[in-house]
Each structure stands twice: as C-alpha cells, then as structure tokens.
Image (cartoon, rainbow, N blue to C red):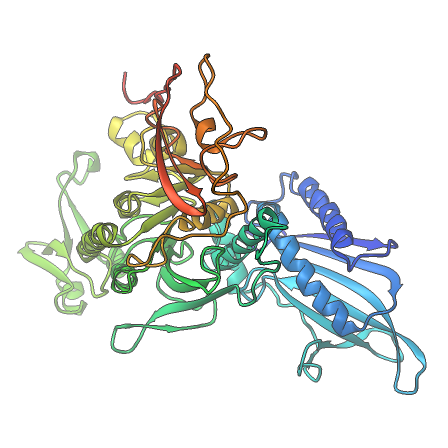
Length: 583
C-alpha cells in the first residue's frame, strides 16, 4: 500500500498435490519452501523492515485413516517442533501466520462418504507467538463457500465463528514498531523463551539417548508465565491481562520453567522494556515497576533477567504551552543576536493552571523562569527515578543472580542498568550508549560519527569487557539466556543446578597438550576424537573478546556446574577500534 505508515503484509500462497503435509517431514519441507519464497520477496526494496509475513498452503490430496481431531492434535505437535527448529528464520522473515488447508475423508451420520475441509492455523495475531488452532470448515450447500469455521478440540466443537482471521490490530502495530528499531515485541519474548526451552530439552534428550534412567520425553507444562501487575495498593500481584493493553513502557513476569536441571520447575523474574510505549523511555511509572519487580526477585531470592530496549530517561515538553509564549529579542530586526527571555501576556498567564509556570513581571507581561507543567513524569522526577532503579540494580547484583540482554538499543539509564547488572548478552544490532551520535556531532561541530554502533555497538563493548557474549538475533539471545541460567541455582540458597549426564564421571581426560602451541580451550572442552576435562558439550566461554591472554568460562563436571580460568600461552592479537573523534 502507498499509504504512509500503513501496515504492510507479505503473502505467500501455494497449492500442493504432494501427500504427507500433516507429517513432520512434509510440513517442514513445505514450510521451508514458503520461507525461501518469502526471502526472495523480501529482497524487494518496497518491502519494509516492519512488514508482516503470512504463509498459506492448500493440500489437495484427501487424507484417510485419521479424524479431524487427530489431524489437529498432530498439527499442534508439528508446529511446536517446527518453531523450535526454525525459530531464527521465522523471526528474521517476520512470519506472523502459517496456515494450511487439508481435506479429510469421513462419513456423515448416515454412513455416506464425505470430505471434511480442515483449516490448520498458527497465528500471532492475538498476541501469543504462532499460537496453534484448528477449524472444521462448514460450506454453504448451494454455493460451496465456507459459511462458518468451527473450532476443533475437547468441548469446543460447538464454538463456531464466521471469520477466524484477525485483522491488523494494536498488537500488529506494536510488533511493527519493535521491528523498526531492530528488536522483538516484549510479549513475544515469552514465546521465544518457550521455543528456546524446547530446544534445550531436545538437545538434552539427544545427548542422554540410551543412558540408563534417562528421561525419554519432554515433560508437560514446560513453560508458564504470570505477569507482575501493580494492584490498587501499589504492590505487585500475579495475574494476566490482554496483550497490548499496558499503558506503562515496562513489563515484568514471573516465569516458571521446567529445565533439565530442575524438571520439577524453577522460577525466574523477567523485566523488559516495551519499546512501543513512548519509545521505551523511563518515566516514573516505568521506574516504579522496574524497582518493585527487582525487589520481588530479591525478596524471593530468584534470578533476575532484564531485557533492555529503550531510549533512556523521559524528558518531555509541556506542549500546551508552546503556542502561548512570546519571545523578547535583543534586536527585533536581527533575531540572530539572541533573545532576553520568553514571556506570557497577562491574559494568557491568568488562563494557565496555578503553579504550572514560575514567572517574573516584565513590561510585556510575565517572563518565564521555570516551566513546571501540569502532567507528572516529564521532568527531573524521571531522573530521580533513574537513580532509584540504578541503586536497586546494584543491590540486586550483590544479593541475587542478575543478567541483562540488550536487544535493539539501550540508552542513558538503560545502558547504566545493564552495566550495573554486570552480566551482559548483546545483540549485534543493539548498541549501548549514553547519548546519540547526532548529539555528539552537534557538540563537536562536524559530522564525526555516522552510527550508534561506533559509540556502543558490539565491536566496542565486546573488546572492552562490558559485553560477555554477542548474539545474532533474539532467538539466539534467548537461548544464551537459558544456557547461562542452566549454570545458576534456582535460588541463592539452593545447591548447584545439577543435571544428569551421559558422560561417565570416572573416564580419563583423553586430550593431551602438544609440544607446539595449542588452544587451552581444547583441554577444557575436548575435541571430537578426544574428551576434555568437562562433560562433552558443556563448555561455554565468556568474555572471549576481552583479555585475550586469559580464557574464562563455565562447564559441567559430572553434571555439576563449574567455572574455569585458563591461560592463553599462544601469541594473541588485540584490535582496538579507532575513535573517529580522537585525532
């Protein structure tokens, strides 16, 4: 569409004569073909970065030997597997809906053969990321056009609707805003966490395959979340609300996850900026929610994860006053010489609410000395709140496990918070900075910087030791969060997070140092041919861009998490990015 800022949707539609669409391999093959077509379509310059993508496939072969209910249940399992394996590509191509129509052979009440059209949908339109649903189509007997769609499921067969498709709504608008700044909508991170958790379990079960007493299936009720909401008395309560209805640009959840270390479940507090509310800026309400959620994590001794995408402290303007003040120039004929003061006429001043401005009397009326305004949360009170949450983050780091993930951008107090939390995972498109490059260019009087990445991108923050790990996208970032949490006890008073391990504890360390210079990481992780010190596949290095002569990381020994420090004895090279402002 040519309408400015209108929602843009890219559709991929296909018809297939190949049977097997409802199987995992068939569904994966068809979805990959659809994603390939989407990738080609999105190379068109007319497709914007905030567009939404939909994939539709109509399977013509009739399915036999299964009921619509069995087809629907199989579809739910297939979608979960596809999301876990293709999550990064689905995110990159901004897929918000996947739909397939199949034809199932059945019989009517009289035993006569009939074909039942079944529509299988995985949609993000209602808020939850690619939530699965299945419908039986009931066509008009005369025209053949579908008259209603009836939901398939236990106790839901009587629920029918005229149209199962949600139009572009506030949630889609918010997703587009988040994508525009290179991030993911805050509530969609819950779906990414669930997908990452499924991936973690699949890898774990694959590693344990054949081990005695090893679990064989992923437990049910894998992921649950409850939002931390402010009650009437100002205290946080657990609850749920409709996605996209929040008026405050900060959200928080208490997430319960069944992990390989804690199959019975563990709790983690997640706090996230909602960049779709006033650009994710920190005002008094945002500061209060952040403070209370962090305090909740400390009081319950739970890990606290902060997902940062913001624009710093909110400094607003009293827009109502803009058209009402006048300017007293030093020389009316030459405004470039400057002005003496801003003033209000007597009539305008008396019409303003009392206390909204501080003034002094001048010949023209009333000169403005201070603008107070009538709205709370646009001035220095936000800076006071920034100090409050900075202190809370320092306290949280001392008392509990804190971890921050920078997605999109993190500015001002947002950058301070992630640094005070110490442990940082940074996305490649997520700079951390105190002020933008445009403001610095104005200060320097010339165009020195060309992007925010020159100030706080991964190429700056990773070599200087602020960032522990760099990831390519949000799904990889969520997977890194879950892997880091796997080394952390579920509370500060709990024993270490131990997981079952197929690697025998009493085996030998097979890898041996060589007379020639070698990589000390191999001594810890091992190779494909020779096992190292830690359990196979458990070693994870951090801060690899900083302090190149020292290697640090985490691994497991007999399933028990451990930290390791090794010395790099080979010749190392360090690259210091040039600062354009430093001649």
